[in-house]
Amino acid sequence: MDVISVLPKDAIASIDEPRFDRQFEGTLDETILAVERELARAYPILILNYHEIVNDRVDDEPIAVTWCPICGSAVVYEATVGDAALTFGVSGKLADVHVLYDRETEPDWKQTNGECITGDLLGEHLTVIPAAMTTALAFEARYPERVFLQPTLLKY
Image 1 (spheres, rainbow, N blue to C red):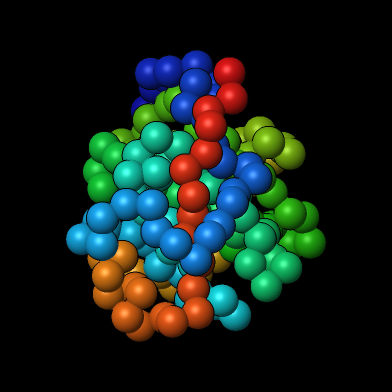
Image 2 (spheres, rainbow, N blue to C red):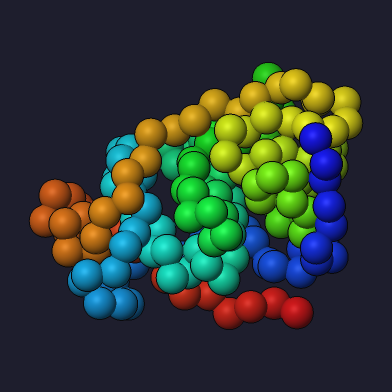
């Protein structure tokens, strides 16, 4: 598999300290990625287009919310391998698909299937967390107790 660099590592900033609110900052017909856990969370695609990864904690477990704007794929993963918690960044690479990297050990991971494709964790797979693409309106109707990811200021 060919891996090509198209941007410097972290040229696209992940969200590492997500902020949530009960109010949605967009229009109700916008697409969001919904994660149903103790409290349902919505990750608006318009925000994911700018950041591609949200490192979050749900039910005190680390998760990685990932989005590839090139192919339109959204996948949420448990951000752990064994007992190790991982945080992910945008590698700036493509390997047929968007490539993430984890900041703890720095190998590359395919966004679409959570497979580690380089380094000491080669061949490991992240565990998928069920998530659904829907509209903000449908999300609000289904989950009266819910929160929406809020826009964040980019750090340079």
